[in-house]
Image (tube, rainbow, N blue to C red; front, side, top):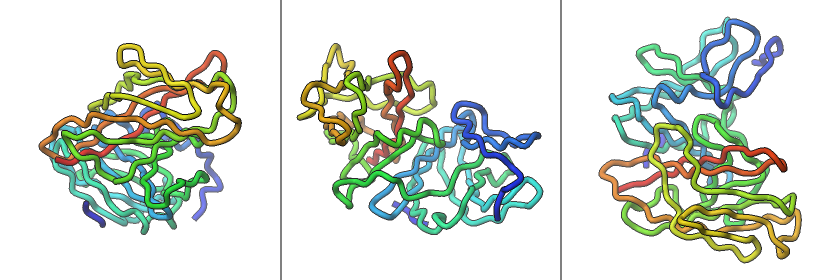
Length: 263
């Protein structure tokens, strides 16, 4: 693993599914345009943030991270990371935690988008040594009440791995489903099995549903253990755990997390 002023006149609107391009009006979209093939996953271990980047653009890239203040003020370069094609790398992002907005672009000048600097999540992992993710790649699909924990930053290719899905049940109808096609240019992980001591887990032809049952006291944080049969890889690779979470009786929210796999 490699380590490496105010915007009072602007309103910041998360643009989780729209292309993140510089806005001509006063609205500044947050997020990275995934069509560029660069994916950024924020992961926390205790008080320490990591940014893990994957390059699916078809060529080697160099990503520059800068302090963004406004459209009128040039961004201040902070870090520069080299990314081999079809590979992934993780970097200690502790030095970025004091920033507000971060600009991501390629050194050839191509603008990728803006992300909020890493901020300490409100939820706390039961094991402070665990690695936790609270939103998806490129700031997509934030789910503050549901997150993923794992014992190591990288999963080992060709082995079984455990992921812990943590969720705060707020309704007897709380439900999650896996897998769901994300439409992103990242390979997807397949869940092999899932179990929980307080949630109802159903498996129909490797399609999993996780639902609150009579044993689910609310609003306790409940855990589901996901077993993943990690595929073989020849290069460090970002995979996607992709599903959806019910947010109302007739609505769903995407649930995706970038999961790192090493040879």
